[in-house]
Length: 218
Image (cartoon, rainbow, N blue to C red; front, side, top):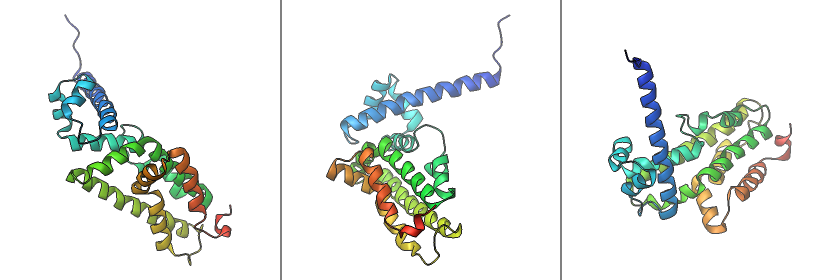
C-alpha cells in the first residue's frame, strides 16, 4: 500500500511551491524593471526570465502594476514577509529608543536601508507614476505614510520626555519628511549620483542639526 500524504503536508508543499514560484517571478521582474524601465518591460518577458509560463505570472499577480508594487514592497523591507517597514524592529527602535540620538540613528538606519535596497526601483516608480494610476496612487499613499510616521516620531519624543514641549513639532515633522521621503532619495540619485553610502551620513547630520545641542544629549 502506498504511503498516504496527509492533507496538511500537501497544503504545506503547495504553499512552498507557490512561494518559490513567486520569488522567481519577483526576482526576474526586479531585474527587468531595473534593466529596461517600467514601460519597456512586459509580463511575457518576466515569465521567460523566471522560467515559468506566462499564465503563471498573470494568475499570481494579475497586472504589471501589481507585480511592480510587489517588487517595490519587498525591496522596501528586504524580504517577502508580510510585515511593513513601520513594524520592523529597527523602525520600532526609532519610536521607542531610550534617548533621542538612539532614535535618530535608528530612523537613519531604516531610511538608508530603504535607499540601498530600493533606491533604483524608486527611480523606476517615479518614471511610471505619470502613466500608471495604480502606481501613482501607491506612491501617494507612501508619501502620506511617511509624513504620518515623521509626525509620530517627534510627537513620541515629546511624550516620552526626550524633547521640550515648546519645540515646533509640525516644523520638525515637515522638514524630516522632506529629508527622508522617497522623492528626495530619487532627486539626490538623479542630481548628485548619490548612493545610500552618501545619503545615510548626510541624512544623519541633517536630522541632528534640526535641534539645539542640549536636545541631543544622552
